[in-house]
Length: 113
Image 1 (cartoon, rainbow, N blue to C red):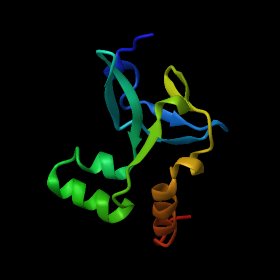
Image 2 (image 1 turned 45 degrees about the vertical axis):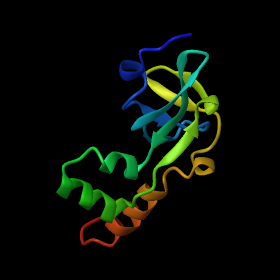
Image 3 (image 1 turned 30 degrees about the horizontal axis):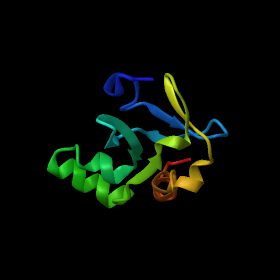
């Protein structure tokens, strides 16, 4: 099976086994096997997204959300459609940690409730 990776995978929503949105596909790790390029892993997380931003924006993202980038092995992908569905829970990949840190930080702000 072949995919138009840019159109069908990059920047798509990641969804874990429970249907919880757990990030976006920020990048793909490729390998060459048998003369063909194959996807080895999905890369997601604020660390991978921060490199795409202009310097000051990247600095803010790294300070607020950290520098972690998660690699999800391609064999853990169930389907690729309008979303990329994963076989396991988001926590097993270390996803949602940055969102939880940001939620704790934002909850301390006045008028956040």
